[in-house]
Image (cartoon, rainbow, N blue to C red; front, side):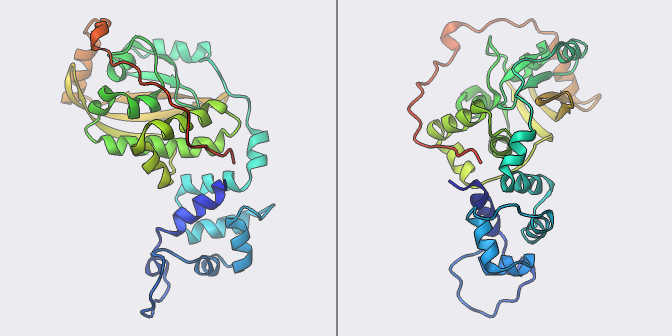
Amino acid sequence: MNPLGEFLRSRRGVIRPQDAGLTRYGERRRVSGLRREELAQLAGVSVSYYTRLEQGQAHNVSDEVLDAVARALQLDGDERAHLFVLARPGRAATDRPAPAHAAPPALRQMLAMMPDVPAMVLGAATDVHAWNPLGHALLAWHLDEAPNMSSSVFLDPRMRELYADWPGKARSVVAYLRMAVGRYRGDRRVVGLVEELLSRSPEFAGMWAEHPVSTCESMTYDMAHPVVGALTVNQHTLRLEETPDLMLVTFTVEAGSPSAAALRMLGGIPRRAPAPASAPAPAPVPTPRHSVAIP
């Protein structure tokens, strides 16, 4: 498995020659995107060197070369950062601190001081480490225990119904996990989560093959909440320097909007555990048929 090569080929394949300023003279092409030699030309490197880079055989790649390749591939900020992580797996692995396994008291206090804003603390693999009552009521009203948010989006039918644009939400989850596999390569929980979703969700596997990449730090979602109806929320993800593997995720709404009224209504409804019969039975976990290489 060559994550760097997979990423480079996926991005090379979506850039049309005319979009990169290359002239076409009516020749028949076997690929819709850029050829290796075309990308090498745009990046100002030799074809043989770029080929070694795409094959994962180029070592100690300079910032200048990676920047040139990023420009040629028209990468955005998140994609460029991902490229650097994949090209330098050893450096990123040694620089990263050990994953956090619990929300520190400061984050829990912060959640307690935000009673009117749905909020939660997520780990690198999107496990919920802590949340406030409104965050629980908004995103997992039907569950008694904190879930893994990525698994819920793909494997929980009620979460599928929660998002008006479920495919858009699902792709953002895949885009985050693509970055997480590179950034948290030593975290077996992240890798195991991706392997599980590849085995259990054909939709996840299809989106994973497209290789989207994004930190998803700011997103807007339209929701169809079964308790309070429609609302639009703005999701913001914050990271603290002392706990870089934990994320504080908040969900805000426009002041004075129908969404704000719905959120106030949700906050005033006593939460009751769902009847056992209404809870979906957990699906059996098959033996994974896919593997995710740790770059």
